[in-house]
Image (cartoon, rainbow, N blue to C red; front, side, top):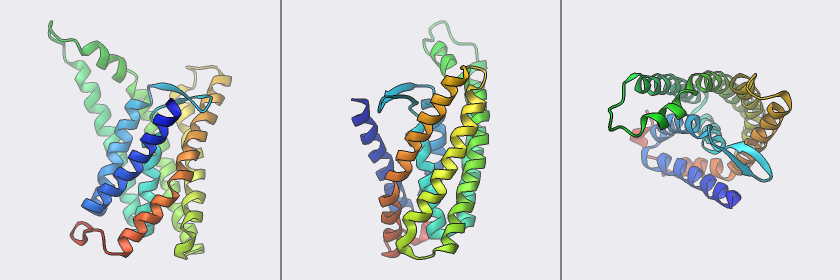
Length: 232
């Protein structure tokens, strides 16, 4: 059952990115970045069993941020993709501070949500540090690698090479950095390795599955389907 839900959620994420892009243009891609990192930081706290391994739920929506930066690199260049990384970085900092501030308020005697918010957000600083480090390093590498491969093989037919060559290495960096910072000392080494491998495996699947969608986004841009007034 989880596998079917995972595939459905994956498709919804990819189609949502294209919808944002179709309606809002480049701005829609920038909007998706903070959505993906904030939602992922909350969903990462939920562990699920999928494809026979334990994995965090936030892997899907977080991994889609790599598709967004690859679309920006392909259609608008390195500068636009780097701007998206900066937006995501700032969104992570701001959301973490705001979530923590919510816990500082004393709840009303009639409040029922504080204990649940505390359970979610009390672990957020460590998760945020892991996310900031992993997101910044892996995404900047992804932008650099994508543009490197684009210069090496500029043909539009070879988008799948630069998309996968950049994303799959970047997501390995992301998984390694996040796992060590977020869960180092919390779980024993064998569990850390299992989390790392399962996390990267899920992100690898997302990276492989997003290839048709970067072609789709490129075709929309080429065919004039993207609002011009939204591109600046």
